[in-house]
Image: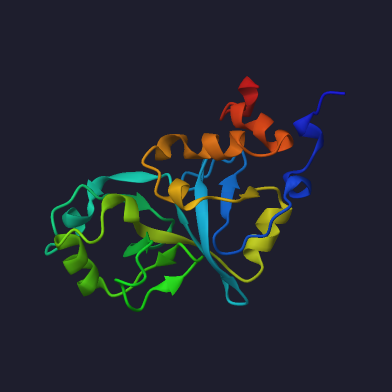
Length: 197
């Protein structure tokens, strides 16, 4: 018998938790401008709430456009989310170079000493595939994310370090969705407008 995704809730298909290092993938028809077809890397989830960064919503600016004494590079900047939208954040894989960073997984960390970061980039110790920059972050109150998961807004997925830094970010949502278990992968081809389905 053929699987009918419209007869199953996303919350029933989720088998993972929204812990640091996992990703939230927007349900196919989510129309929120910040989160439409978004892939969000979770970096924190505790009693105080949850924090993540949208990996696939780039801005048409570079980091040195925002920070006057930042080395001129081709490092892109992404919209991390609607919270603190004028603050710069970054995810990287160089904890030994950036004191003060916070651990996400064994391979991923966020933030750290910004002055040391600038020097490390200037001397090419940190390259484009080592780091990703964001303006703002995605934040949820203590119960907010739980309620959104119950409301079927998000798939929870594993995500690799390579996918976090993937330069083909325009296809990231589709690639992760289509590589998921069959019941989820079938939704990767849904049109953004449900009336076209």
